[in-house]
Amino acid sequence: MSDTASETTALPEDSVGIVAPQTFEFDQPLLLACGRTLDRYELVVETYGTLNAEASNAILICHALSGNHHAAGYHSTDDRKPGWWEHYIGPNKPLDTNKFFIVCLNNLGGCHGSTGPASINPATGKVWGSDFPNLRVRDWVHSQVRLADRLGIQKWAAVVGGSLGAMQAMRWALEYPDRLGHCVVIASAMKLTAQNIAFNQTARQAIMSDPDFFDGDYLEKDTLPKGGLSIARMIGHITYLSDDGMGKKFGRDLRSGSFERGLEEPVEFQIESYLRYQGKTFSKSFDANTYILMTRALDYFDLAREYNDDPAEAFRSAKCKFLVISFTSDWRFAPERSQEIVTALMRADRDVVYGEIESVYGHDAFLVPNQQRYWDLFSAYMQGIDVSLDGSSN
Image (cartoon, rainbow, N blue to C red):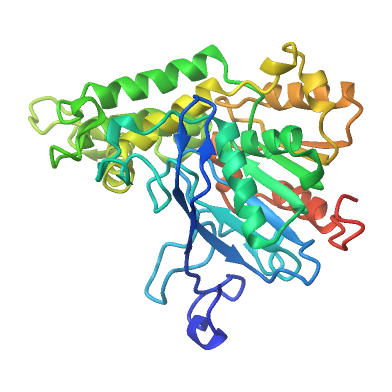
C-alpha cells in the first residue's frame, strides 16, 4: 500500500514511505470465548512490502496493549510520527520489506478503526460502550485467521509480536500449528504474575473512578474519563521503563521551582512533567473501554490452562520454530518469564533460539532503536527464514 517513490523523497530512505490503512468488513458471525457472538465487524489493516506469487512470504505483526495497525511508514509527507515499529520494519531492517510482506492490524476491540467499544452496535444503533463483549487473546487470533483467509495467506512465514502481541503469536502456534512457520516472542510471558495483574487493576480503577466514566457509557453522555485514563497511562508507563533508564533520562532534574528556603514556587521534577504529558496525550487518542478490555485480556491469558497447566504439553501442539527475546532491565516481563517459555519449548522438543539482551530501556526496549545486539539477533533470525513455498518453515 505504499505510494510512488516521488511522494516519499522527503522521508527517510529506509522507510516504507507513505502508507494507507485498509478496512476489511466481515459478516460471518464470530463466536467469542465469553460465549457471545459478533455478527459483523471491521478490522483496519496496513501492509508493507509485496506478497509473492506463492503467498509464502507474509508476516503477521501482532500489536501490544497501546499499539495499532500503523506499525511503519508515514500517513503523509507532513506526518512527523511514523508507525510504532518504524525502526524495525522496512528495507534492510530486521522485518525486511524487500523480502517479506508485512501485515499489521488494529485488533478487534481496538480504538483505531477496528470494531470496538466506541463503534456503533448495529443491533441498537448506539455506541457499544460498556456492552461490548469481553475478549480473550484467542478471539484476536480467530479474527486474524479470517483476515489471513481474506488476504489469501494459508501460512504465515512468521507471526511476530512483543508483549501482548507475543501472547497472540504463541496462541497462533498452539491453535493453528499448520498456519505459521515461525513464532517470534519478544518481552512476554505465558501468563501474568500477580504483580502485573495488580498494576493492571490499579490502572483500571483509576479509569472507573473517574466521575466522567459513567460505568463505561461516557460517550452517550458526550464526555470522556480523561483524568482517569491519563493516570492509568502514567501507571502503565512507569512499569514499561526501568529505574536506570529513568535515572539517566531524568534523574532528579527540576522543571520548575527551587529547594531554596523562602521561595514559594512549587517544585516540579522533570519526570513529573514527562509523565503528565504522556498521560494527557494518551487520554486524547485512546479509548478508556478499550484500555480496560485489553488489560483484562492480558490478565486472563494463560497459555497452559487448557493443557493441565503444563506448558510443555501446550507447546507440543506447535509445529513451528521459535525465537524468544528478553531484556535484562524489563521488570514487567522479566527475563525469567522468557526463560520459562524456553524451558517449556525445550521440554516439548521444539526448535527454539533464545537471546537475553542487555538494555537499560525496560519493557519498552523492544520498541527502542539503536540496540545493536537486539537488531543483530532479530535480523539474523529473520534473514534465516526460507520464504519458498516448500521451505517457509525452515
